[in-house]
Amino acid sequence: MRVALGLEYDGSRYCGWQYQDHSPSIQARLEQALGHVADHPVRVHAAGRTDTGVHALGQVVHFDTSAQRSERGWVFGTNSHLPKDIVVTWACAVAEDFHARFSAQTRRYRYVICNRAVRPSVLAWRVAWEYRPLDLERMRRGAAFLVGEHDFTSYRAVACQAKNPVRHIHHLVLTRKDEMLLIDVTANGFLHHMVRNIAGTLMSIGAGVQEPEWARAILEHKDRTQGGVTAPPHGLYFMAASYPAHYNVPSLRSTHMVW
Image (cartoon, rainbow, N blue to C red; front, side, top):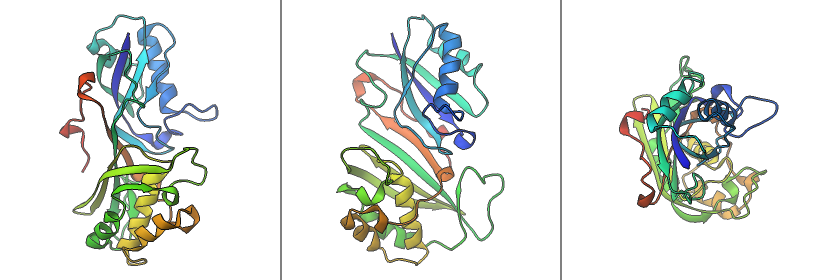
């Protein structure tokens, strides 16, 4: 049978989602835990391959197993073998053609910026910090140029291996909650470092270093070297992936939101 899981994690101590020989990864920790519960080796596939230091509140994964366990058994059994910074939030059986990555229609990320003169302490590895006052309206004007279908070559990492740089951003919303500035972006897919490069560009605009139209000019260059700085990873959260209704995959609950 094929099983899907919801996953939350603090990525501060990990090299990212994907297995690496030289450093602990979320994938390796989860596969080890699931292996104990299933009593056989398990390989998991994720909706999004988050980078080093990036977090998740709504990651979705799937795996195949011959073990018969209840949904509760998968959740609580797996969590008993996971470190405290990784947790399975739900489990459900899914159709054999479901794929956490390739069946996803959209993915949503949130970038969290602590915008104050003094650096954060408790949240140091869970938010980005910008000491310069950020003008939210200027950032919104810049963000408007990025909504829709575009070639995001200028907003992806130089080493990005995706063959097609065209993506469709459905929503790019900026809000402020006290000292926290939130960038929420939903798209049909993302390129390597795409959200962090968008965040870095908008932060420069908000700080008055660049005009809002700069976001559009970067798009038109189709050259990463003409883009803004890459914002740090610890402000980035994988919030959710959406799937066709017939798969009956649970959606992110509001109680799982941050800020």
